[in-house]
Structures are given as C-alpha cells and as structure tokens.
Length: 255
Image (cartoon, rainbow, N blue to C red; front, top):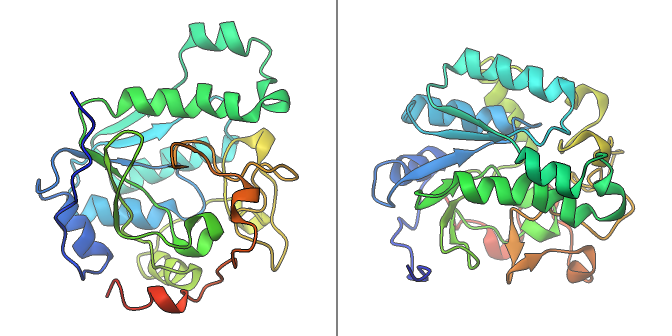
C-alpha cells in the first residue's frame, strides 16, 4: 500500500483535550499512544485515560531503562487503570546478533536506538493510522516548530502532539492539580529520561534534553526524524533554543 501523504483534516484551534478528543474520536482512524513514562508523561497519560480509557498505550522497554522508570511505569499504569497497556521489547535474536554484550550504544548509538526502539515501535504500530506523542516545543530547537498534528514523512502515519505548546509550568500545575505522581528521577535533575547509559542530569539553564547522549551530536533517538533521517545537533546550528515562552510566530496557533 502506498504511503499516505494527504493533508490532515483537523480543527485549527483546540486545547490539548480538544486535540485528543478529535484524535481519539475515530476521525483520524485507529490511533495509539506511545509513552516513555518519562519526566512529563503522566500528564498526557492522565488526559488519555480520562477521555478514552481503552486507547492502546505502547511502552517501549529497551532493556536499558532505569529501574526507577520501570517502577514508575507500573505505578502510573495501576493508578490510571490503563486497560490496554502494551509493553514491547527488542527482538531477542536481533539483540544477540547485533548487541550481545549490551555495549552497542558506546560505538554506534544510532544503531542501538534503531535496534532497541525504532524497529520495535515500527512493528507495534502496524495496523494503526497514527499515534499520540508527548513532544513539546520547549524541549529544544529540534521541536521548536511542532504543531498539534503532523504526518510522518517516512511512514505516512499521523502524529498527534496535544501538548505541543505547553511549558514546564503548565505541566507541573496540571500534575499537582490532579495529584499525579512525578517521575522519581526528576527530583535528581533529570528533565528528559531515556535509557540509563545515555541519560544524565541537566544543570540549571541547560536545554531540557541536554542530558540525552551528552557530548554527542545525537539529540533524537530515531523515532522522530526529519526528512527521513535522525536529527543532529549540527542541523540546528543558528537556531534559537526555545525556553518556556513560545516563539512569537507560533503564539496563538493553538488556543
């Protein structure tokens, strides 16, 4: 079947819950949520659980995650009563063939992410028309122009970003208002949480994703690509890193 490249029929103005209701109404086809159960994930998970509790939620266990993330995933899933949680892992035979010692991330981090995340998610998304992500513009220059809806050029799938225009203050306020548990590593300075070997705490004033693949050009795992390739730091040279304020040209696009 040819890849779908048609425009997405979407409401031009909606809040995060409105974006989710539209995405999960069936208007866009069959939609899953993909969650890392990371630093900010509980907010979007709570919204989905409130709006459409039977939504499939896909969690990629790379077998390299922090123990705290695995415990947090279990806590949040039970708290929100996620009824269709799908925990996926890398293929054991592929791991044995390509990363038998678990050190591929040291020499070829892109290949490691592809093996442990991208290939696994691609398989899990078979049969879906799109997926919900927790990406936000404030998370760095590679995400500064995010819109609530986009079509993945590589797969043709719709990607829904309900919290695209949210900042960290709104995330915290929502979590506290609904008495949702924080990820335990946030208190230790982790603002973006991925695999343990490739994630470190972030200092005050640093990009929220500065702790991911620290010291390397790599800034995205490969699940989210640009022009069919993994985004690199050099691709963003000269671009201003957004803070908690939206760039002027983006303000007001999502009510």
